[in-house]
Image (cartoon, rainbow, N blue to C red):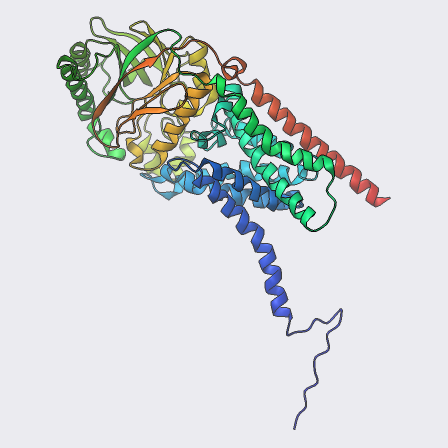
Length: 537
């Protein structure tokens, strides 16, 4: 009979019976923060439209703060990247609807790098007093960078754009999207710190009074600030009213193929305008003072094609009102995405050329490199569009209408410039047909709602295939169409000329928050250096 001696475990010789369990536990402890960071990013995505779960942004940032606190910057970099992927991969899935997953995955991967850098910074400043303030400012700094580089930036997914239905929305009128987003992130990180301190107290440990006060203020001040800002939100008619008509003509089919049906798209919008004119003559709806068509409603250049000119002119004459027409125009060998002011008596009298054009959609950066990777992508954008240089404000039946074409609505400067140039209402003509029935349409509509409050202006959203809408200066959507249907919206809306603090200050609040972020990061780095020196003595 063979007798096996029991294993002897010691400090240098772990018990083999418990080693597998220990390895599994260690692996679980390593994977748990990564999984929590990614799932917190998904939670942030769920807070965005078309859902109205804006408040989920708070626990999303609370979880991110809990994951990052107490870790080094390298861990923060990786965990921040996972948070960014969890958020941006589902948020931007619409970018691959017609071109496949490659561009979508590349865009999300690149944009998540900015979130990774923020994660590294948050991990560093989380050791400081009142860390939620520094951490929220770092998030704002990350958004500021993402809105400017590469290729002039991509602000899609700014935290402010998920708050159109939230209690924090009035803060948009105080300091624009940077202040609104900062308040939401500050409240989320403050919630994290408040829970942490509550757990510390529960374990019968002392909590510094200053830390408790800072955590409480981080949660309460953003809410109090939003409530205090409510008087800035108004839909009073300061300069009278105008009756606006938003025309959605629809497209023959969704996707990129609609481009092959340019004449049909033009005819659809002319037909819907003539149908509106018939309803006006029958007394079914009020006669509009101004009529707004979407972006790309006439991809046939009416200045070079007499038949397109005649179709638009007939529609304007039928409705007896000036029409803003979205066209593609070639001038001196250059293409422009243009809004054309069409007078029923005089024809085209003014134009606005889109200034913030979309990379990989309206122009192709790195064309030779991309062509080497996939020649199909270069054929989709065979000729680059050129940029406009001046703000676009049309005078239509006495009203000053600021034009912000589609993608431009994501950029703070592009919207503000129209208001400071005298716009009394804003129109955001768009073409979302290439993105089918994806969430992109609802994400963009939420942007326009935030812009309405930010600048205290009525915002109209004429879209080729929907969703078209009329938004009052308080952010409420009063009328909207369905998707891939023809229709028109007619409503008397207020005209306003006063400027909110956000309009007056412009980029200043964002600059100040970036400086706060830099100050916090500098403090954290200096404290780390002092700590290492002290440890080496």
